[in-house]
Image (cartoon, rainbow, N blue to C red):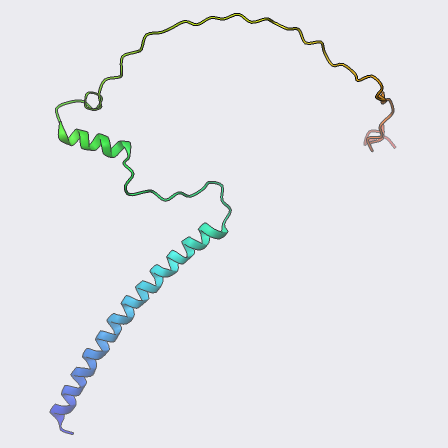
Length: 134
């Protein structure tokens, strides 16, 4: 082989080596991203759940996005004026009624059932001595 052929082959191998290094780096980044995602999923599945995780719905509007869009449409007004003043209060109506107050008769024992009265001395497992007494 001539010197020029070896030089061309060397340049081609260097280019191929650089391409492989770039591909390796991108694959390594992808592996790290997938490993992170897998760790998050494992955490969601296997960790204790004190609150239920509900992912945000992209179609759901938030109060902040509504206020921001209102501010962009009419910049001269205050946010309260843009959203609107509170609705006027409706007429109030007073309703009254009467009911009979019944007195509770208290606990009544059922006739014919054997009711027990428990009296006794319970052992608490602690003697009457103090720690200094012997």
